[in-house]
Image (cartoon, rainbow, N blue to C red; front, side, top):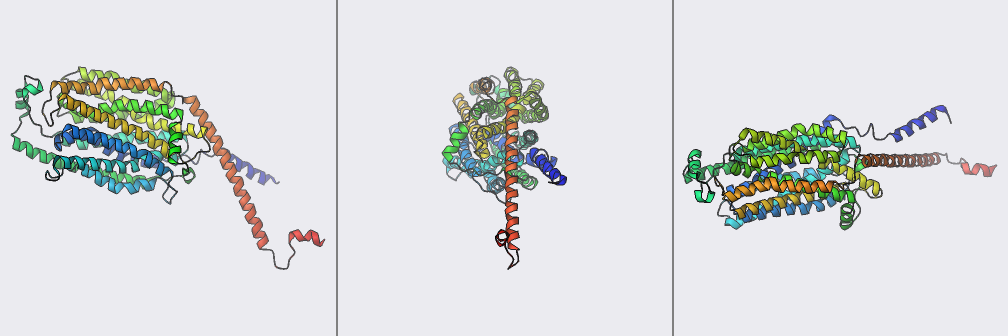
Length: 544
């Protein structure tokens, strides 16, 4: 063999030994386009999480029991569809546009239409209260189903655009920054509408306050006909906000579709049955423990998120400032995402869990204890937003580690990424539905007055418990679960090494198979071009 041939073989073997460095590096443009694709989920989810309860009670004027059923049933239905959509996505074949992107694009048109109709109040003659209940329940379920068809493929896309763990973490940090920015935008759009919602005075005995009439006089409440006119304007404002959000949704999907490309070598359609897939995913120990910890800590912040608007308005008395408080908390989280990304890269993800998540607990307690101090409340919310950044960043940074751990334990199983992500979304949405349902029922039992300028004392105490005691208990329980989570930095690096070895062996196998195919094709061409009448090579020895 000549020296040049040896050098070629050596260079090809070196290329196999280092398959991930040049090919898995993502450009800044690709990371930004991928991150922008996460905005639609947050820019629609934030108004639903923060304002849908207020909208159903105060604007659509449904009773609390109907509103509770809508909030809980919508989330439960959304959660149920996640594993089904994840399984269907995993079985999807490769197309010219990829395996996941077609799901995202196809679900978008109907998703924005159904989202818009959630914020529309039908005329009162259409079925009465029962008709309103069925209207919102139907469109909430329809939108959640279509949103699942968007969100499950999108979250799984991390595993399909690169196989490098560092690049995945980087993409996740970009995505979280954009998602929190979209939360700020959605809060600003929707919050300015709710800020001017009209309220109805209630008797001072119901409010358990001797200064109720003074409060009404200070607010300069108009007679009821003007209040009705203001309600109509508020309904119109909700529709304008929904239209703006739908437009942003569509633009972000277009950017994602044209700015991100899936790697075909990452496409391995799932071949197992639905029940087998459930057993494999849920039965993986690290995944089960991670889900329990994430769901518990996330539910803590769902209680805080879903009740903060009512808490700020009725318990703190900051009706004109609560939307600015929400914005400040989200801005704080957005600004601290780079710090937490550096922290988990430097000290590990489990350390980030134990430092970042409980960081917000003291500020939850102080929010309840502080009254009528606007500046201090702003400071506490800014500090609590630092902890919120960890809750948003860590789940999507830790999920790829669990998927890699599953690959190491089950190297023969392929195409399971979407199933892992869909089950996480299932558990999170189920927890969100539980928190919303419990919160609404608790307020109903406490005597919540729809569109009231003031609320009874029991309602205020219930709100304080829902944003302080309940979240703190859930966070402590979640941290206890995380203690048994087995994937630390050593195991993560070991899994990375094993996966690189598997990729190298697979690349060598594919190259040897390719050489064999080329040799067979060359032999066939050689035999095909032998002139007629010429003796075959195998016949030369016989003639001799």
